[in-house]
Length: 141
Image (tube, rainbow, N blue to C red; front, side):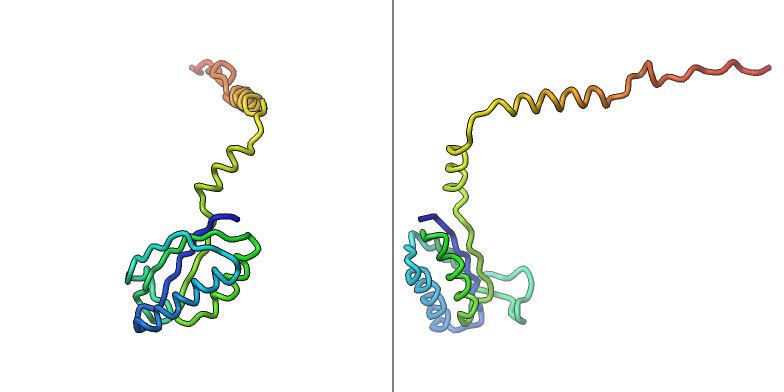
């Protein structure tokens, strides 16, 4: 199972019951597709950077969860039709991902070779002052 974070912006004009119902549906989608919620961060009501459907404020909630990669597409597909959810974004947990990439990275000697090639190319491309100097013609009297 991979770790993900879901950011949800719910209509700020919705009543508390409607907001809670939308949030319960989102949580239900995660658990329905065999995901487990690890933490939830409620940011409350915030102002949008721009109007969305003539609404200026939204209620923000960030949910961290674990799920299989195949479940993400299904969750996104169904979250689109949840009432009062204006925007959502699911991203993979970068901390977990960066650790895996460092472990899988094979040790090679290509990096020093590339650096050496780049250094030689920059030396060849740099103009030499002696070659580019132009001799002045004698002044006519």
